Image 1 (cartoon, rainbow, N blue to C red):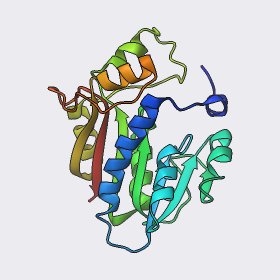
Image 2: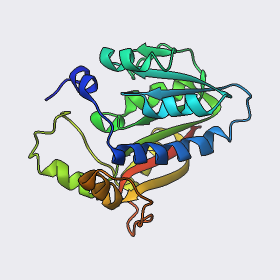
Image 3: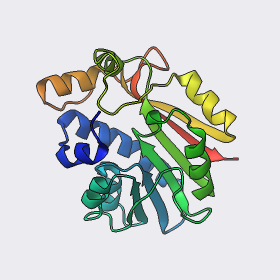
Image 4: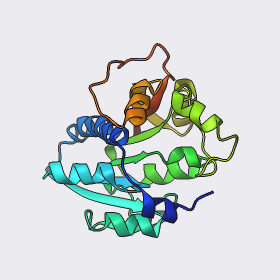
Length: 224
């Protein structure tokens, strides 16, 4: 299993990943726009390379951007672009209650067997009228098949995928108000061809026949 520090030191973005980042950005901006404050505070939890928070920082003058990760290599990279970058455990951020208008993560929650400590902490630092967005792997896709081919030797260790139903149940159980669940890239078909041929194109499949048949699901919630 590779350490996260080693992973981020060697990380390079593929064209398929750049496309996925842009798709996330569209969703994030939709809900950032719903915040009426002239100075919105947005944090990416488990920021990794910081692709999405950097994009927000570059394109919006009404957002104060923050990034958090427990990898020193990640924070060393991101701090050059996002000065408000800190190294911390995502289950204990040390921010005051009700700090952020938007709290989001991408590719993080699936690495934890017990999601409750994460969700409790993110709820604590989220403002009462703010939004929390979580992008996680969906259950039925080529990406999940690719992981199965590793026969349990996945380079990041523990990781899981979610069905639409399981995701709703998890957030309802933890006392969140569900706003919406969205899917990105039906069954990973578009991303598969982008990765295979190292190209980017306008997706020809946009909607899955299954609610759990996407590369990623994004759940948008508010705290009750």
